[in-house]
Length: 122
Image (cartoon, rainbow, N blue to C red; front, side, top):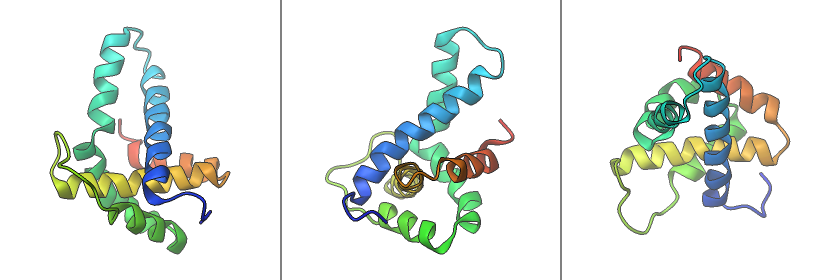
């Protein structure tokens, strides 16, 4: 891992990457009303929804990616997460860290591969 980024920074950028991928997926459905698109995206990128995807994600990860997941998941949080349990929040943060790590490492094709495996039924 690039040592200049800590877990929360990886999760921060990963959140943006996942949001972009989800938006691209949703517009490919043909929906053009931005309100509907935004509502659908929000349901897919919230911590509880991302946490559900983690069980599918973990077996697909390389050892290095799994280490990044654990780093993000174990990041200490100040305060209580909104609209999610602490477990959901930590699992989602781990997932976001993986996508952030892949993007910042120039492994966007791998990020797309994982995203497609997670969201192919949407």
